[in-house]
Length: 283
Image (tube, rainbow, N blue to C red; front, side):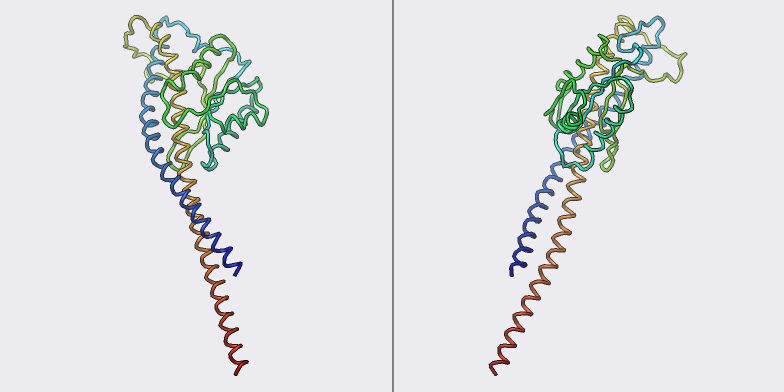
């Protein structure tokens, strides 16, 4: 009897867990749609601004902007973007390991700007130098929410505190795939012009002024877009993880229900045998 009560209690507990994971899956699916739309909407802008920067940098007599300047790498800065919460499969682990491996491969000292609690906790636990941390950005951040990150990066590179800046974030490929990527943010690398001889644009007031105004905006947009990619990856990974958890819980309930029915049938059979044996003894 005690075994039957224990099985029944476990079935109820797992069913409650399955309801929670199912609800979390539905919430993540709803947030993922919005995040996915934001990511896909921002990609064409990022590609076009790279092309414009390439044309500006190729203009005759264009001055070298501080954000385009290349120098010997003595200090490296990495913007490490991860979610604030867990329950999203191996997303956090893969992202943290990818960035940690990159840091170990570098000869120059590396400092980190962490965005998200999971990345901050991991890097702090393993003794990495964290220059700044940003948490609780939310599921629908605006460009203003990420401007402080961009400002730190631009100022540090402009005054020579760091010589290269990298952006580490999980890139949203599709619902099932979120790929850790690490792109160089500074110095800015303009896109390659397919036909260099056909530079027909006229910039007002001058190409130098437009370049000086556009480069900081480009860095700000890249950081903001990386945060959006991370949010879309987080929600899609959480949706898949909660779906798998719900399916596993339902399988466990089926197995426990079968074990419960078997134990109950054995108990009933045993009671019938006891009754039959007692009746024969009295006869």
